[in-house]
Length: 137
Image 1 (tube, rainbow, N blue to C red):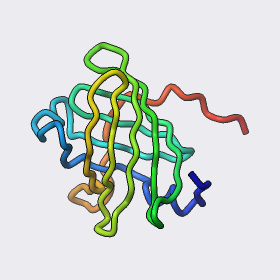
Image 2: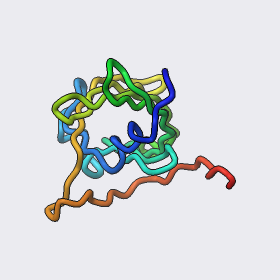
Image 3: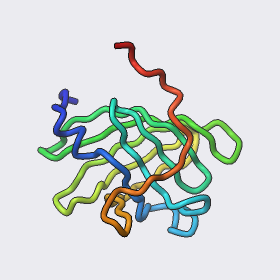
Image 4: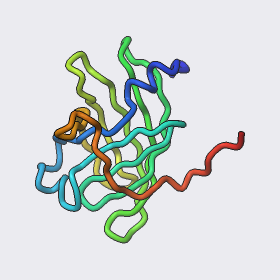
């Protein structure tokens, strides 16, 4: 994957609401909280759906001229360690479409849209913080 410029990473910044998947319905996705992916600065973030709460480690690029993110996740699935990977592309309609893979578990396509609060600002979503150490400066 080619190295992305900062513009590509910025395109993903903030919280995205996972609207649908190929495998799980909305009731299942939102078991603990509204399903989400949050991309923070420094290529980290968080991810939550069903009973999974995880930190993410991201890489950004492009695919067919569209912004691409690939990430791994590491966290908790109802009290059990959970890891996996995912990728997504921002399509022309502004939605992320991609696929997630739970290590030794399920995989599914997903669709996410940028989350907006009633004020128009991205809402805060609680999740397990990434355990990835911050780089030294």
